Amino acid sequence: PLTIWYRINDFQLVSLKIIAEALLLCSPAYLNKTSLPLCVSGELESQSLAFSKQTTLWASPANAGAQDLADEIAAAFAGLTISTTDARPANATHMLLYLNEDSFVSDERLAE
Image (tube, rainbow, N blue to C red):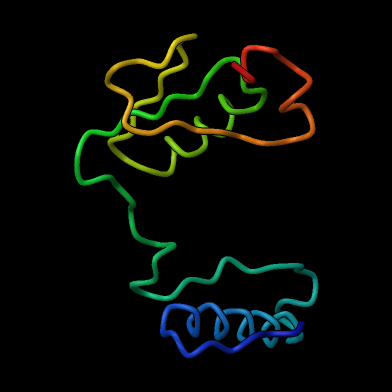
């Protein structure tokens, strides 16, 4: 596969993983595989991500698909609370706006 090389260390690790995976997949031991779960010690993907203070993400029920995305984000970040009330809660620190093909046709409340 085509691999882009960046000057930033964290991105170089990603490039090295892509190169290593491509080489390993060509070896006899991995010919029947399509991908390998490679990781580099200390890389961002292997670290737990968390907010430094209590964070509440508001996902409006009028925003089609926002609830599912909010749940995925909450699973990846410790210390994140999800709110799905109709009105923006007073304790919300962030609002999730999920744009997709249904964003402006699914619910008139989103436009308000």
